Length: 390
Image (cartoon, rainbow, N blue to C red; front, side, top):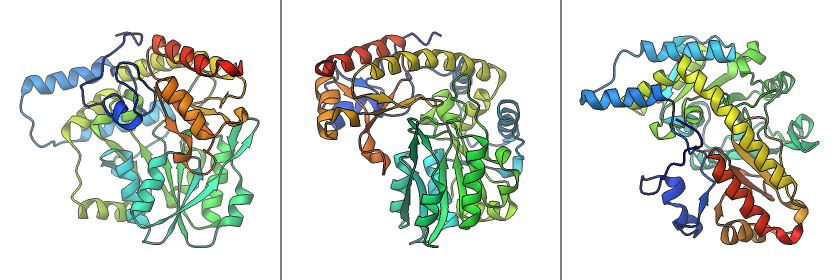
């Protein structure tokens, strides 16, 4: 399988492609979907094989004996991230948006504040608000064109009503890989304000050469009394439709509270997701991820070179993820005019920056996890619709 092979996803119930015309008014035959964060690549052969084996067997009953699945998670975290995980600490949820909702439900009460370091993944705020909690936006600072922590400003914002902080590590949409010192700063902030720390690390495998992701419990081993970790195979291996994620809780008391909510809501995982995850977390899966990141690195270079050559546009340096975060503020245009050019004239569907919260007002997010020919197409379209600036 080559990452260069185009795959026609129209008519497959793909939200990214089949809903593009409805949501963006971008005609099917002309549109380029660069919004939803899934990839235009098939997963590794080991994942495909396990599904084929299940289909060949033909009986889809209840799943049991999850020892292999749990062992695969522990192996992956130890081998790829230097993080020792106990089987007993692992809970499986229907993806990490579901995991976020369960954390909010288990560890906060209606009216409590939940801190987000914005701009950040838009589903967090949606889940918090839907649960009757209050979103507390703490804007990230920009230092030398990258996001940075601003603890002094955030300390001044706290009122005592805040009970939880959700960290995105690596950061979506800014692509930052947080340093050990930054992670320690987050941990100290949570201690000062007595916050549960939920660290969403779904992008932890998607890190570019020269950078290294550090899991929160590795960076700050003594924070586990208030730490909830969220990880998944879904983003790494492009199997988001399996809706399988892991909430990993080192502390027994927090574990008991979370497990009680999981049991009360009758949540249990599906066999397809568990089998796919176990197959993915393997030496074959690791080799595939390494090849994927080398391919995405060239996509990143090509896309950023094009964007940064257009006056008024700036792509934030991407250290992780496959999501380019492009700032249009120096064009002097409104977000409406920017969207008109990119979407209506260029036929490119993107995520709108304002949906990511404070600090995202002048940005669009572009998904670059696609065959190189599609990146070339996107670059040509952007150069064309902003030709008057060049």
